[in-house]
Image (cartoon, rainbow, N blue to C red; front, side, top):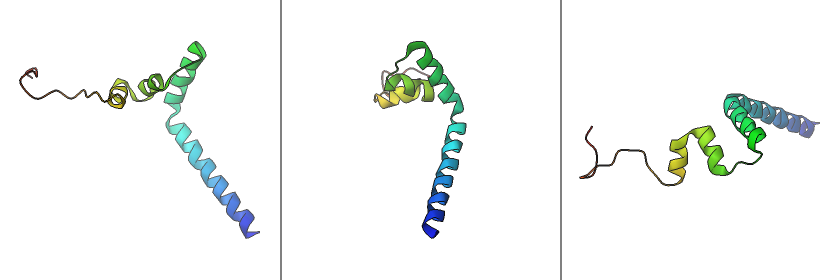
Length: 76
């Protein structure tokens, strides 16, 4: 019975963790779900932008929003 109890403990612990993650990210899940209902298909960049914002999408593409330093930078 010790194996059965350990399996039950692992399943229950991971179920709890999964619910926590889903609840913490509910707003993002709703946003993506609504977009999927509208358009049926989304690519990874669209999902990243919806969940993390345009800065995250730019970072994934290697673009920085930080102001440039040097002769071409704009004064503050």
